[in-house]
Image (tube, rainbow, N blue to C red; front, side, top):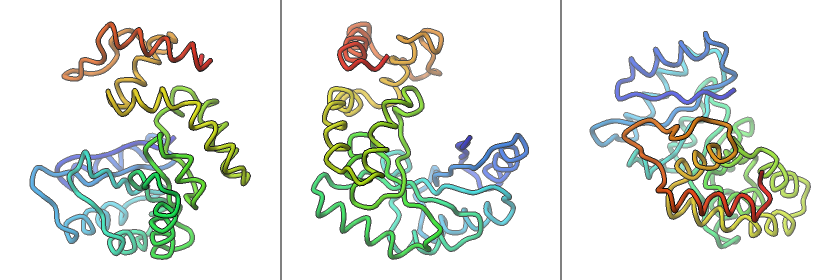
Length: 226
């Protein structure tokens, strides 16, 4: 169980990290967030402070769309050298395999061998895994684990074409993620399958419209995701 932590103040992040590990979390995931723009020095100091008191592995989450902060490769290397850092969740790689390979290779060269490089962005998961990412931090995997596993197993077994074929099969799902956001679509899927109560998302997020929910339900049935 990887628990996401985050707050605007380092003291609050440290408290959340302590709470997560005391509750039995297997690892924590942390993205750097702040009301004010952060510098590389700010972000390094945040991870340095949190990892100093951490007894479980930490996943560094580079999510520039949300945090408005982008890690440099050099910062990856510095943070990855801190104790307890076990993985880095990188933003989506380019769709072009050559460009994606170059990007992932540069990161893997910069960080220690024991630090896993994981891809985020479900629509480019096959590309990321095929060019050297160790793992996929999946959105869809939280709701439809079998769907994610078939793609991952193909890629990690060396069947790059099979992983691409499976990703292409799921393109209607990826397109909805791109249009409406993966959180809203995943919530609608979970609601459609009866895994959660209707309108489960916390306000102010309202979720999808009725028409969009019907589209999600059709895609779930058409792709045999249930």
